[in-house]
Every structure is written in C-alpha cells, then in structure tokens.
Image (cartoon, rainbow, N blue to C red; front, top):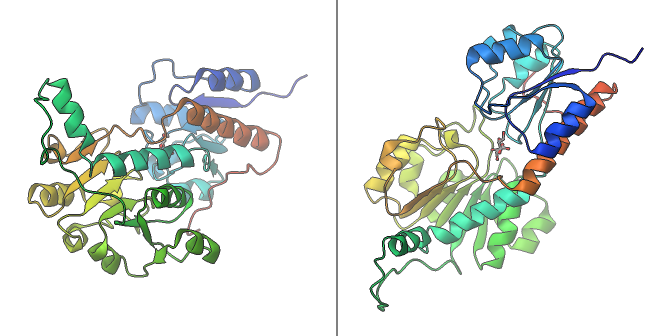
Length: 328
Ligand code: 8YV
C-alpha cells in the first residue's frame, strides 16, 4: 500500500506550474479564491494540515499555533521574510519552519534600484504629467531632479539583498556605505569600496540616499524612528523594499510633509495593505504595492524552493531552508 501522502494546505494562489507540481506530489489543498485567510480560516488550516504553505499575508502567531493539530510538522513559507510567523513558538512545538531565500534577491534589488533612480529623478512626476497631457515644451529649469553619480548610498542591512543593491548602485556611481550587525567580508568591501558604519546614527546624518534591507525583528522594529529620521539631511531620500515596520511610518510621513526629507520610495508598509494616508499624494513619494519580488521567474523559483523544502522533509531529511529562531 502506498504511504499516506502529506496533507499540504496552501494559503494563497501560487504560479500554475507550482500548484500543479504540489498536487502531483502531495495531497494538496489550494486556495482557489486567493483571498487572504481570516484568523478563523487559518486556525482551521493549521488544525488539519501536515504542512502549511504560508505567505506574508498569514499572521501565524502563538494563538494560531496553539490551534495547530498534532499532524502539523512543517510551515513552508513562500517568501524570504518570516516576520509573520512566531518561529520560536513553532519550533518549540516541534514544527519546522522554512523560507525561500536567494531566489528573490536580484528581483528585489532591481526594484530597489528602480526606486533609487526614479525618486530623485522625479520619473513618477514626469509620467503623471504626460498622462495628464501637461507637457507644454522643454525648459532649462523644468523637472530638475538630483544626480545620482557621486552621491552616498547608506544601506541598512548588508545581507543578500543589501549586497545585490550595493553592486548595482556602484555601477551607477553611488558611493556605498552600510550599517550591519557586523562588517561583511573584506574582499566584498574592497570590490565595492564600501564603508562600514558601526553607528547607524552617524551614517544616517551623512547619507544622500538611505535604503532599508534588514529583516523586521523585535530589534529592528521602528529602527528608523522620529529621532533617527531627524538625523537625516533634508535633501536625503529614503527607500524601503524590506519591511514597513522598520520605519515609523507616521514619523516618516510627518518628516516628508515638513520638508525634513527630500523624498521616499516605499514598496512596503507597516500595516499592509493599509498605507498611512499622510503618505499618499505627496509629489516626492513613490508608493508601490509590495511588488519588489513580483516577477514570474522569481515567483516560480520561490515555489520550487517551497516544493524542495516539503519534499526533503517528507523524505525524512532536514529541509535546506530551515529558519533557526534567534533565541530558543
Ligand atoms: C514576497 C517578501 O513576495 O519574500 C519576502 O519576504 O517580502 C516578498 O517579496 C512575499 O513575502 C511572499 O510571501
């Protein structure tokens, strides 16, 4: 008799080939409607699943985990960030958590560069103007943005994505500065002529553009608070494609409205899908709907990673992308 297939519950729609393969391999339950699960639906899902395939829109906290059935052994997150999961509680309950690192690095870095280019050069204002039919002819002093070449980019969090951003930014003539828990490998620093700042405060005060690439953890929640935002130069720009919670969104909106910052490019928000209304409609701000990793190729590769993690686990091995909680 064939072994019982794992019951895999997927909380959102995934790319077609990924769903197909999941169905071939496991007893897979898909979410045909693609609406984010309510708390009650998520509690039901963890009660009946052997494996839950979650995304950033699922809040898997201690309360949800308390409702998990004994069969729930793996949470295979479709995504690199796992701040929506109480990983420590999951692991304490014997549930393995995996994620999909690496495969969305380039796409997220590309989206970051798009914002780094677009905000100081006011591309969104130009697009809007053309859409309104307001191009009345060229003028020497019209639509002047700020030059990138020679400016200082301060990267907060020099992991995979931070490094990919640094490489791209270097090609645009930006000077690379970074703040991280510790300096990265010497040869990487040398290649990019990157400067490490142990003090985030000191780095912020000197940067022309600041880009956030650290994960959201209790230690990085509101890392850029009102006090730190005030350290930044009034002609500096801020970019965030990591997690909204790293910036105090209300303080950022206040700083932008008060002219204490030159502009912002944001792909992520503190209370997604809600966006602080004070950020909306500002001419010097580009807001994107959390689409940093949204490429067809990336989303398929993320799905493949999810499958590899589940399959390895089902075969009795340790899945490659296990998330190890900071404190056990
Ligand atoms: C993903 C992300 O698309 O991977 C991440 O952490 O933020 C996104 O780019 C999303 O999390 C999918 O769950």
